[in-house]
Length: 382
Image (cartoon, rainbow, N blue to C red; front, side, top):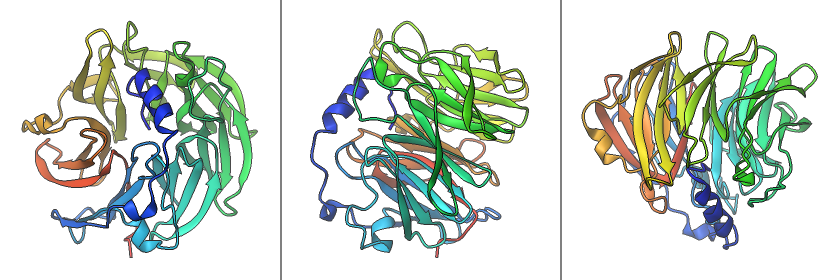
């Protein structure tokens, strides 16, 4: 669930009061042949569709490189006994070991799925859970720690530490307000605090957690309303600020993990989402501004070694004109294919676009509602 501007938070709050969709309203699984190819040891990817808040329409799609088939909504057909299916608002997804982890924000749970079969394994209850990080035999989940509501006195959030063997919560660590994405560098976990529910009094810090003791040891002041986070191979952490949607623009900052300080800011590079592949940081911006009542959309690549912006439009065939509302991005580390999802009007099925490394459209497919996160799998889906 992304807050493209603070008005969305109000919409989400209103939507949370509506009734959940009945299970029989789930769209049936649809398979589309889009073309395959050899992606080395990557067999395909899972795509998480958020679904609108209150509609219980979080769904999971799968693309198979070997068959070239894109399959929508695979969870209910593999788990017909799960009445409410995945739940309300899918927020993040990741693979660790043999399990696929899905954060279902407004259902207040993390769904654990067998990555080989797509079968339900377990559910872990975490209130208003947001994002995932993996390491040291543990899964880390950021949590707003309370209901979906705007409140200037909203409580601090926390990070939950989950044991991957027992699937139990080992410990929790209090961080800043409304924590979002996280990154692990060495023995430290970095957490982007947004403060989005406390608008206009946003948080502007990154919490640093010592993983040996699982306690916050420092806060790094960066910029208001922090969101996305990626760690490169040079000990740097790239973090996005959504600004305040008025006078403070969205920007991208670089944190040195050796000094825990801001060492660079990419001026005029707004970031709605980003993904790292080698030394290339792929960024798209869909940054809303209340003064202009417009969103500035760009598709950029940044060299994380030199901090140089290599291009502000990695789509080279004009296909970006077809994308109404970019909402997710991923890059296959083997083929360097670029995937961009499109939420379109946010209430009807979206699309996923596959581009060659040169930015030429290869194929597209219809998805569920509000397609967001993609994770590549090294295991074939049986």
